[in-house]
Amino acid sequence: MARVNNISDLLEVYEERFKPEKTKGLDAIIQLLISGEAGGNYILKIVDGTFAYEPGIAEEPDITVESSFDDWLKVNKGEANALTMMMKGKVKIKGSVPLAMKFQSIFF
Image (cartoon, rainbow, N blue to C red; front, side):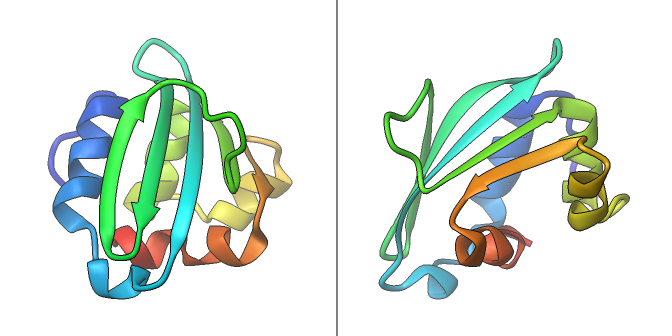
C-alpha cells in the first residue's frame, strides 16, 4: 500500500483499488467516523459499479464504521484482523453485516 498518512490518503487508495465488478447492482452508503488527528468523517457511496466519497455525516448509512485512524489503517493494511479489532472494541461497525463482510473485497 502506498504511504498513507491520513484518512484522505487512505480514501485515495480506495479510489485506486476500487473493483467495480464487485459492486454491480450494489447501492450502499458507508459512513466512516475515523478519530484522531489523521482522521475525519467521510461518506462513501457505492452505486452499481461506481465509487465516490465526500466529507460529512450521512443521514441513513447502510454501515457506520467507528475507529481511530491508526487502528483502521492496521485493518486496511492487513496488519490486524477486523473481527479481532471489533472484539477488542477498537473498531465498531453498525449496520449491514453482509455489506461489512464484502467491504475489503471491494477495495483490496
